[in-house]
Length: 257
Image (tube, rainbow, N blue to C red; front, side, top):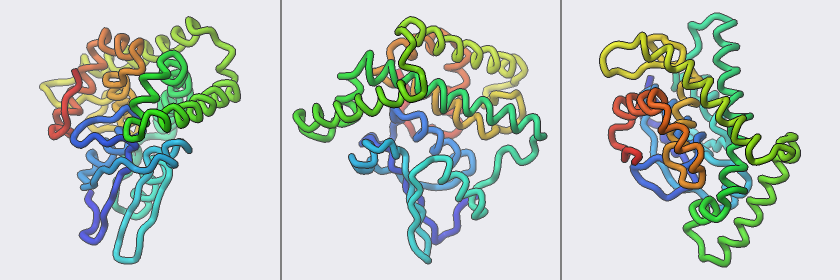
């Protein structure tokens, strides 16, 4: 499915990279959904205030009747589906399969993402700060970094995750990645050729595949998450899953190291 000729979609990803993946899994998730549906779009960095508010990515959809802004990847995807611009990947799933797919998305986006926030914004604070705010002078970078650090700590404490030790945090993240690798491994052994294979082993992706791809890519490139990067690279099936999707849908993007 593709957009109408009068529609222009812009994804604001928070980073200035052109032709490269960015550290946010939600940006790559949204880009993957657009590319799965063959929808053209453009990418821009976006504004610092939106980064501070956690509204990355945000999306603008311009048509002949005006411009709408969506400050959440799920809201943008829902709008594109409801307006007929994008196909709903889970349309042919049973109720149980849809619940299973949604549960995997929630595991990554709600639980894993929060625990990874500790690795990025606490354990590797300086690296994360300098990358996130690389476009501003050092003094402003320090100030903005402190704002983001406090926000991250409030999130961890508010969700009851601040009580875990660093080792416990690491073990929880490892457990999630292990379960994901085992699930994808089962799909990988059934695939043929060099085409992408999908998380549940079907012929086509589900909504969860965009999320899984986004998190694997984020883990492979984020230098503020060395534990996650090493763990993914030691799970060949996760790298192979991402590589095949990259080759099929993101051939214009720079490949990770």
